[in-house]
Length: 570
Image 1 (tube, one colour):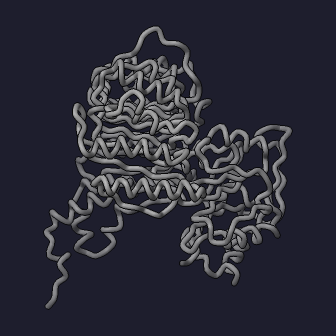
Image 2: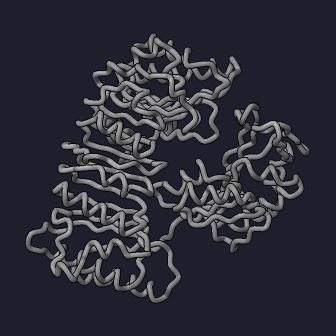
């Protein structure tokens, strides 16, 4: 009798395989977009289920959405949460909690944590919840990693309130903090080794001055330029620096990083920014080994001119300890820029006195229709091969995504553009004011188009995905089906459409929308009416994979929305 090889693997090895295949936390609660990959192995067969149930470490990562005020729904969620704690056993838990304003506190979940004596290894929650329950403070003092976020972004935290829950947290080593000033939170700063900050540069420096032992630092979403700094801040142990903001040059001015080994920057948009980087390298006397930059602008061919200055240094020794160089979404101005970079890469690969050999060079180019530049890129890649470097040529371009009703670009457009998979995102909104804000908030988007979505025109089968959050139901009811047909035509085979619709049938007029003088209009086909649209013969190639009605808080109102996610069949 033939036995498949996979059935011969011992349970211990299967457990390790499952652990490596389940990096995303399971989501429980009323959320239309869930990732239950850790549960999949347990649903394959009885043997796999037994292995999963006997592996507590598989049940240590969980994201909980507290959205429903219905008592029955809350009871069901707490039952699932308790089952999860039982399966995790004594293993420490990584927990993310998201709560709508309609749900009153974390009481039921906290009681279960106390009852099962569960230890939290990492915790992500809002400041409101961190402050709400004094019983939580004992649990917070045990965490190793904390993520704190205000409920409403920059305006979501009362600056008169001080967070003291982590004042005595001997295990805490990693923290991620969003839009909170250092004066408003007590953390054991001197023991932190990893810190991520979402704030302006002045506030970020205030945190860094309190954290001299940092080994890893990430700065995101800086929203203003800093003042002047009387002296540089020296971080003796910092080995990894990641910056995701357009004005990082100003941030680099105030640093001294002698131990830096890994540097990752985004949006190198000026020669001035690169000059600041070179100045930092000079006074820090670092031995940088890995350097990565994204969105290298074409205006000054910054990468090439900084890597190799042939008039001053015929043997390029910039970053003499560099072992790995990454330049993603590079838009070289001309073939000369490519040749200058080629000289640096090939010479460092062959070996240059006084410099280590370059072992890794990764690059990707932004789409460009210039035939001459395309030919130069092909010549560049060929020359790399001639120099002895192995490379993999990938012709797959960036996934093209259209967002209908993008508003000011926050948060959806911003999240898409900053994603590691490097999407090419086009945003559309009928409001010129919103489009202007979106261009400011998301400068890396491919394009923004102002106008009625019904007037848009894209080539057939040209888009990988279309998103429409809270937008299509502002069209007249009879126009919504036509819009969906247009979207279907724009999508490539295998492309995705994600949107939400109203649940009521007919026209809706809502007075006092956010402001007393604002009136909001929308139209709906009803839940069944929307489903009928997707069943039309013209849309027969759409396979609906998510069809869910969810309750959300929008402004002062509780609203139900009908979420649809469909894929165009290949």
